[in-house]
Length: 416
Image 1 (cartoon, rainbow, N blue to C red):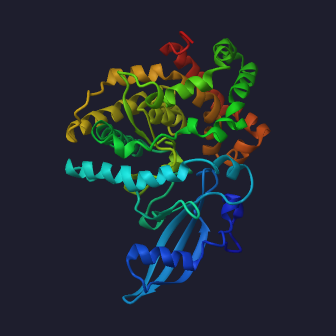
Image 2: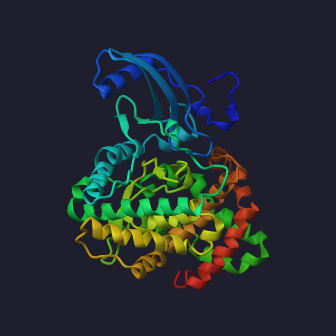
């Protein structure tokens, strides 16, 4: 790290690179990637790759590798993503997960096939950044081309604008449409995408998750306008996580004849997207991609991506726009399954309401606080007192007031 760097803006475990991440390692990677055995890295600058709050489920570094070959001197900006090595909460939570094998499968199998199908249909949409190296042994590592020198950035200091939103949901719709085609015609390509949140017991048993409803109920006690809704949440307190899990695992455990199933991104929020000055978007972080109802990415986006003005109507306009692109893309790529309908999509969103209940009571207070730079993500995950404070953060309280009214209007509290 440069001596004058502001270390507070980075994750602590990314301030110093591990010993194995050195010039020889990058030399070996680039020799293979460039098919150039005489390549030599002459200089390697390593810094943290992202700001606090951008991610939690990995350790990331940015490096600029200067190297020489017989053709001259070159420079390659890279992003290195690996598992936590420092002892502590993050390592304990992630050590036995399928995060890296899932992401490697996304980059090497699913996403290239998705792009190939789009190209055949005359659509040049780019779904992923080139992955130049991956391994699971002796350590879990992924290396990508760095998008920052190409003019991409993560939006942190302002809301996403409407053109950017439309580009986001257009790209998601194309991804989902092609995955529906692949699932219908070449299911073996996607058979390994079976590890979502519910398959990560270390996360689902973490206090971040297990204390969500208790914190939510305590918050309702302090807000007079919300007390009338409390009996609904007390009624589901004991089983809402399992019923949320039933939604997420529906494709694997209880396929519905009228269900729309896709390969979802699984963690569809703004810090997993990079934009450029033309408002184009590139999705990143495919660690919990899995086969599940089409509603998973959509509902997640309502709470974790959208701003209040979209969220308070459950993302109606953006989701309807998404569906128009989904339908159009399915036709273009020659999808032979039963076509989804807009009405059917909204019926499934309603049927999967326990996913909304989980997101609102557990993840939403944390993401609202992180987006406002009120608290740091590691504090919210690890410190129960700070996490409880996020439930009383005014923007979150306003969200809850609006959303519970919408739930009531939509009949979400019927037949709990």
